[in-house]
Length: 382
Ligand SMILES: Cc1cc2nc3c(=O)[nH]c(=O)nc-3n(C[C@H](O)[C@H](O)[C@H](O)COP(=O)(O)O)c2cc1C
Image (cartoon, rainbow, N blue to C red; front, top):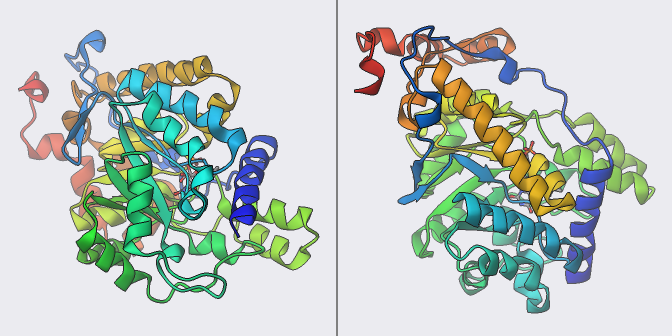
């Protein structure tokens, strides 16, 4: 079983780097328009990008999303990501630690993150399917989950929700019954904050409220529109000659709730939100902040950069941060709190969805926040 998981980890990385696994964008960041402030009164060079997430101050609202680990060949990727997290004061998630929990010999590709980033906010990662009984394995014990946290001295634990991926994976775990009770139990007994993390199919309003009732501390809305786990699994199935699973993977390539929609839907829970899924620029980061995110995650762009070099990761970050600051200035935001209060107009398919789901008042509120605060010249920085 650990050999199988270990092998899958390297296949995931190789396919993601070698093939196009992106989901087509139907309702997307293009629908999210920040309202330009011609007299912003903000100095671009003095913008404060710091943010507090689960009690820790971070220098940027950019999150290096949970990507990999569990195979010696990905150690360099995690080393490059961790060095950048330390250098830039970022939060970093590791990939699923399932294999290393079962076989500690595989821990090196994860422990490197703490060695390289002693001061960073590190997030451990276990799948919800591992918390319950599956046809081929018993549920993890609390002690096993704690082992994942201890492995990287994690500041928080992400439980990834990936029913879509499991259903489209040749050897996937099919049982999702009992995950709610298991999550609730875990959130009560684990010593670090638990983050519920979707992996590309998004979180709707009702599920966000359910997650809050389970006691999670934050939600990564992990919406559709970026890397597609079904596309990834379809490529694996194809390579194994499993036509039926490959066809299912392609059919569900763009299944799910797009990230901007998932952000608005999940906002009702009142928990800190991470926006991951299809974020491809600093402008997208700003858009996600305006829709209520506290942190904004990028997956594939970091994977690609880290597979090349540490310097490429730094270049990606420098570019994204510079782009973010421009959006902040033009939105009249001198800091992240102000960016989260910037006026934002939601158009197109995103608006259509949100209207049908009863978010009309929220859309109006998002579009007129400055006006409703009686905003005047200079008021943005008081
Ligand atoms: C190769 C690959 C491996 C991934 N492995 C994990 C994982 O182990 N655990 C997890 O929670 N998410 C995993 N993800 C999902 C990412 O954390 C992220 O949610 C997803 O890539 C969407 O972001 P993006 O569109 O910026 O790539 C993985 C993604 C990719 C591309």
